[in-house]
Length: 311
Image (cartoon, rainbow, N blue to C red; front, side):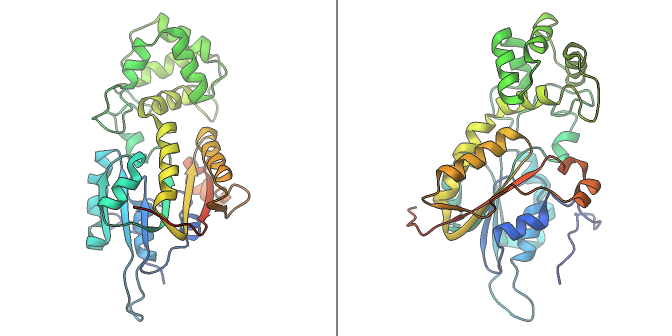
């Protein structure tokens, strides 16, 4: 019997995206060691810890999870949620581009599974002082960590028009990037997220449908600020370095750039990895109905072949 997930106030916690599929993809077992590279609010980590506990009728080793997040607020938010697991939950404020170093330093090497849940948490989107959301006023920050030097404000107000247009096209896959960049540069400076979103809406010429016209532009700025694609590539490379034979990693991506990188990496690493799912997995219709933010999620699963690992 599974234990219901609870938030710190005793109420049902927010269920993370594709939770059952993630647990199955990781093949979580009692006593296993796992890494959640994108801790967020701790939902996936909590579920892994519950699944990795030995049954009371069959005493045995409890599993452990190393939760990593570049956002220090995520560590604070998850600490209370996961405190009942004691030393089985180890939380570290770090970027997953240092995954190998972090895993070794925490005494987790090698591990049975690694999870990447790319994208933003609801907490980050709802934080008015972070600028991730274009639906409310807030500073154009978008940094996962306050230690990062450049913010979205810096990019929007300092980049030349051509560089800004190329950034929006590359990381946002926005076909109207040039007209958007032209409008941004023409009306500088910009310091408010909602104001910038309205400018993008007007200049893009898109109608406001299910997806806000500023979605791709904000995605591009966030990815550029946090060097997300470079970190993703490095994280995947290092996941292979920390997984034991038969260990698995799972990726959950929310836009084509992330998913394409995961797909390419698995295909190019066929000497050490076996793709578990030949086709990308998507959330069920029922999950999308419950959580509309899950609708764009894509999951891939890979398993380590027999290789020798080095610390």
